[in-house]
Every structure is written in C-alpha cells, then in structure tokens.
Length: 298
Ligand code: NDP
Image 1 (cartoon, protein in one colour):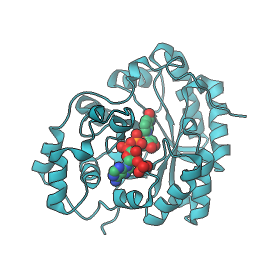
Image 2 (cartoon, protein in one colour; image 1 turned 30 degrees about the vertical axis):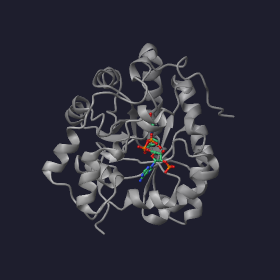
Image 3 (cartoon, rainbow, N blue to C red; image 1 turned 90 degrees about the vertical axis):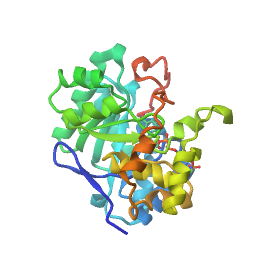
Image 4 (cartoon, rainbow, N blue to C red; image 1 turned 135 degrees about the vertical axis):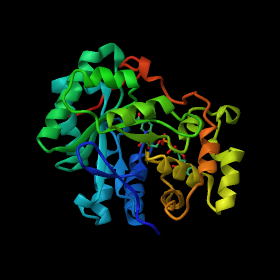
C-alpha cells in the first residue's frame, strides 16, 4: 500500500487528505467507528459540536492507543455559538467534551449571511484560539467565494480549509477555483454523495452516485468499488475527503484507495456527472431559525 496523501495548509500544518466523518454516527457507534478507523490507518477524524458525539470521538482516540500527536482532530463551532464570547465558550466546551487540550483544525460550521457581524466575531475568536495554540489551524465550512472574501476582508488569518458539499453530482468548479486563488484547501463533505441518499426516503429521489453506471463501470475496470472510485476522484483532484461510515467493512473499504489510479479520461468522465444541484442546505439561507437548536455547553 502506498503512503496516504497529506495536504499542507496555508500555515504549514500538514493534514491527512482522507479521514473519517462522524455526522449521524450515534454516540453508541462512534467510539468503535473511530477506533476501527484508527486501527485501519486513518489519521483524520472530523466531528462537530452539533454532531453530539465529541465525547465519543475523544474516547475512541484514547481507546485506539494511537498517540494524540498522530491524529488530526477537526471539530466545528455551531451557529448558536457565534459571536466572540459565545464562540470562546463553545470552543472550551468542545475541548472539554473531546477530552483534549488542543484540536488540529477548528471550523465555523456555516456562514450566517444575515448575521455577518456574529460570523466575523466567531472567526476572530477562532483566530484567538489559533494564536493561543489551542487550534493548530482554523477554517470554515460551506462558504461561497463571496462569503470567503467578505470574511477575509474583515479578519487576519485566511482560512486553511473550506469544508463544503462536493461529490460527482455537485463538483463546485468555481468554488474550487476560488480556493486555489486564495490558498485554501478544499475539503469534501458527503464525498461519496451521501447527502443525496439520506436526505430522501423516496428511492426515486435519491440520485445515488454509487449506482451511476459511469462510476460502476470504472470500478469494475479497476476491480474496486464505486465508493473507492469516487474517493480516488476526490484525492486525485487534490481534495481532502471525510467519508462517514459506522460499518467496519466500509470504513476499511473507504481507506483502501491508495493502490490504484484513475486515468485523465476516467477523471473527466466523473467530472461530467456534475448536475450543478446541491443535496444539502443552501448556505445563503442558513441561520438559527433554519436550524433552531443550540449546543448545551454546560
Ligand atoms: P458521505 O458521502 O460520507 O456518505 C455517508 C453515507 O454513505 C452513510 O449513509 C454511510 O452509511 C454510507 N457509506 C459509507 N461508506 C460507504 C460505502 N463504501 N459504500 C456504500 N455506502 C457507504 O456523507 P456525509 O454527509 O456523512 O459526509 C461525510 C462527513 O462530512 C460527515 O460525517 C461529516 O463529518 C462531514 N459533513 C460536514 C458537513 C458540514 O456542514 N460541514 C455537512 C455534512 C457532512 P453507513 O454508516 O451505514 O456505512
């Protein structure tokens, strides 16, 4: 097996390109998912205050026996904690739940375009924890090029990462171009298109990229699975990807992607699947009334 790829962020910090996501991993499943992933060789775990499983992520890391310094831990500030003081409180609570004294990457979970001042203030709090060494890098999620520029205009540290919905049915070409111009690493959430499946109970609405004949034909050619082909497509485009699974065989499958390469034609065939339609929320309309829940930081 070839070594796993690593991406260098704009402050020199190195981040493994492929990690485990734990959105919708129940607390009961999360400890074993994290432990399994670390035993398989994963070294990046992506959680968030809003996922309700930071405690179990910390527990999984401790149980794995892998050194803390070997694991890249990302967590995120939820929008109910935007504003400077609230963000500092939210960060402290995340560290406490994780049982860690620093995180590797701290992200704002969404932009709140209608509450830009609170968003800027939250990011300034992230800059403070970066300065204190309690986060090794900071960044954002779900920001458009316009959101990024509006934030960068008001703050000192260019985000190291923008974590966004990105899969073959929503390839985000203009945003990826903005990331290259600004020196921001693209991190794909729903990297194997999960959001298009779990957002709907109606199989006819699910638009599952893992069943797309273009992907399954490439998979057959390489003796790999559709998920492995899509993750390979992500990595060969230079993205970080954080597929979620709580099933040991899929956690292993999603990491077994370092021994084959897609050709330029295969990459282009997957690129051409873009529909321009996102499966998740439109970041332009996110606020605390769209997601009316708050984190218990007590
Ligand atoms: P993914 O594209 O990772 O898909 C996850 C779904 O696919 C799950 O239902 C999982 O089920 C299933 N699955 C996993 N591996 C395979 C496989 N090899 N073959 C078939 N099915 C598979 O979507 P997510 O939306 O979960 O995104 C991944 C991560 O991104 C999240 O966990 C989270 O960390 C992050 N995220 C961030 C967001 C943000 O706003 N910043 C928003 C959404 C996600 P099962 O567990 O049963 O295997």
